[in-house]
Length: 155
Image (cartoon, rainbow, N blue to C red; front, side):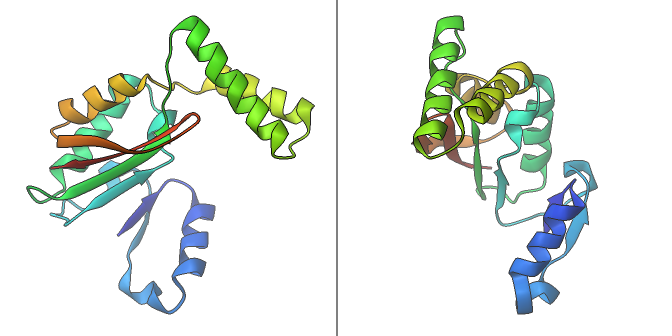
């Protein structure tokens, strides 16, 4: 089962699935458009950072409600310290890494500004608290790179 609000992403999923496509149901929409389950596992990749904290928690609760007890959940998204000076420092690192990787400095600056203005990223501790409030236990960070974090948890 794959759920995504972007039809282009679902088309890419179809392409990548190739011959396994007939084994997967793809749904254009959001978590509330997904079947109730129960599912054996779930992932939420590069999505939660677009949601403000209350909607993020509601989404996490909805994912939890669709999982079998003890089922693993993996989430990965932007999550970095949010104090004023810390946020500035992390976003400056984000920009510097892009430039060092070959991105035009002006474009990297625009991307940094867009992330700063429009991405409701949270502090990693707040993200962990949302996973726990959403019903998950055994919440652990398993991945961290610059502004990115990945968690694994159990329903």
